[in-house]
Length: 329
Image (tube, rainbow, N blue to C red; front, side, top):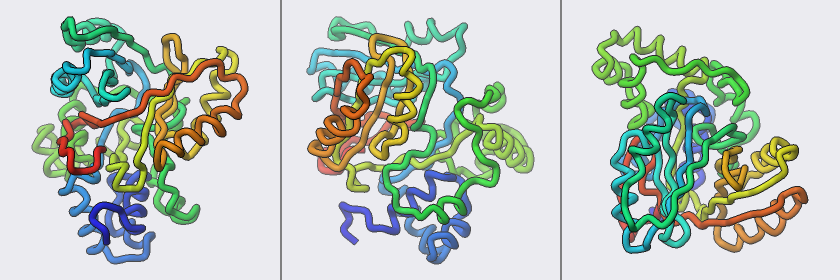
């Protein structure tokens, strides 16, 4: 297998883990038609090389913000790294050719949201502008499964669905309790962490941990999914789209965009652009085709701003290493 490109089994394993990041290797192996040892060996290699992470994340939209900072180019890297060190910032991206930082804060409550926003944003004359967009509704995307790989059959997808179906975005997802925070901190670093490790972090017995994880997942309060190196999967270009549509068309356009295989994230937000979309494609020509064919086919769209994504500085729960000789995440 070429070390720079995923083979079909790697892709199938990643997509299987998108359905259920904590699925037993035995179940994945049975569905994919290989041995348990093969799946375990593949997973360990992908995880140890930073090509795949299983992430546990809260399932609710409530209290999430997208922060957009335009900066002096020479300051971008240091500012991005400072933001990435904050535990209340979930991910950090460099976009627009290294002149802009995107990050996500939350979930936070209405009471402390404003204070966290003020504390999290660095005070620097090297920041040209700041815009905060609250996520109102997520149509698709992290921490939900995305469909970018499309390497499983419908029957395989059915067999890989978690035993308790995850509630939809319209469901009233119960909030996490204070005692769940240590649990989530471990799962944000390793969504497949065992009950013994979770027991040590929470002080609960392994049986209590098992019941609590099962309950949180069944109610949609905890989601476990695969975060993977896009370039390794053959997806070499990504961008954020800031789209404006009339309010009466917002839901319909959001759902239409969410149905596209190129979209990794679609959400209604506050701000001048009321839809935020992350797309992932094979290359820049594919982004052009997506804009001129799929997006152009939605006539109610009034304005589209496209910002290319350069690098992910932080994923959910972890600052990501930067090696210019390797594929960026």
